[in-house]
Image 1: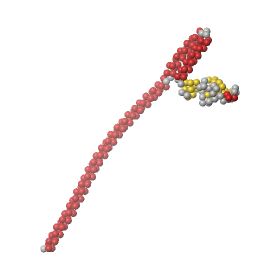
Image 2: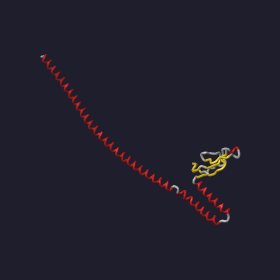
Image 3: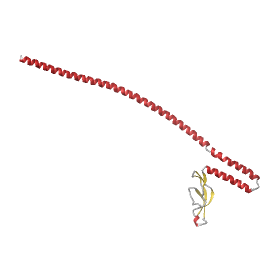
Image 4: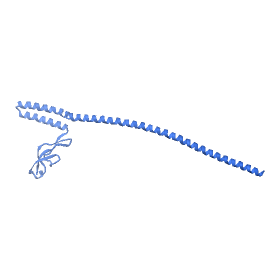
Length: 200
């Protein structure tokens, strides 16, 4: 009987052991199934996220592309407008300068009429000097200034030597003795070099 009891206990223990192993296997299978389900749902979720990100990126690309095209069109319009304004400035840029010169022309016309009938040369001379003064004032307002050369050391940047003569005094060597043609600057840039006679 003891042997039977022992066998029965052994069978019960084996049964329990097999049941524990079966339970462990079932638990492992459930865990594997759960992991596979999670992985599958993750794949679905990842695919959904990728699709969503792709759509967002496409939307952002479309917005940036549209913005780029608008900027290009605006720049093209700006460039055309600038070219048009520049050509108008070149065409009509001298209008203001010429308009202010017209009163000087009027003065010359009046002077010419008076010269023909004038008997007083002094009055004619004064009239021409007034016109000259008015014209030089106009040039000064336009930032055109004569280059002072006589008595100054010769400067090749502003003057052109047309002749060299012996200096009347030793300290006049290398200096301008006479100005044959006045030079002018516009905003400190030489627009015409002075033609001068230099002492040697």
